[in-house]
Length: 392
Image (cartoon, rainbow, N blue to C red):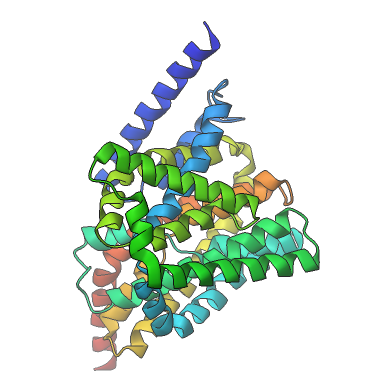
């Protein structure tokens, strides 16, 4: 058969299979991310049935997936909300950073992956999955709970930290010198500050540029602006994903709401391809040797995330059950951990085992996170019931 015919058949099978897997995942109450990764592992190098001839499309589609993930994340916040959240959560954010980045960095150093591997793994274990957490909070009816603003404030801090971290990681992976790395930090901080100021003062003008009463024109403008800004940001060594995130922040009001509604299906489609592509690039045979490390890392970082949420909620005077819910909600890792690992592996600057460890870790945390959030209340009640008779 002609190459394009084979590619169409393979892509059709992938998309249909992803739909089946996604439906199965939400049916049993977990994120579909682990299923997408497993699908990629099954059909990648060393898998059950390796696919060929679709690399060009899947590579570009996965990049668009990352851009849309960050764009829609930015659309969730206005600049004012980001500034307010940062003021409210900076201390909890720093505690979160220290407790959850250090385990990943320590494991990378113990495995001999050097400072670059440590920097990448620190990001993998630090960043929670905003997408999974938002979905779980909505499904469980907890969006109006007292602890939810605490959770969202920590997520806001993490997202802003990513806007600084990703350019630094990109520069380090590219082999930048100390001066080049400092320049990347300075540029990223300057760009983030300027965009926040621009969004605060002139956000309505940015929104007006992309807005349109015609849905087709509106979609083309928003998507075109996102890809254009991401490309320019990448050229400036700021990171394409961060460029899309900052554009999302600059778009506000009804324009942001409409953009989110129209782009969500595209985001989900291309993001699914991103996870599949990461799975395709990981040989399944490399996962068993690092599975024990991934499990250990999962246990440690579950404890550190729960401790973060418990402490942050406690500072707001929230009762023990609310503290437990806040901690459990933060456990899930997902899209951003894979984005970081993907950047590191594609640059060829880290040990190949990092991809396997990140895949195994995210498989565990993306599946366990929603379950932890769902069952934390009955577990807490059982623990309290056992403690009370013992102290009576």
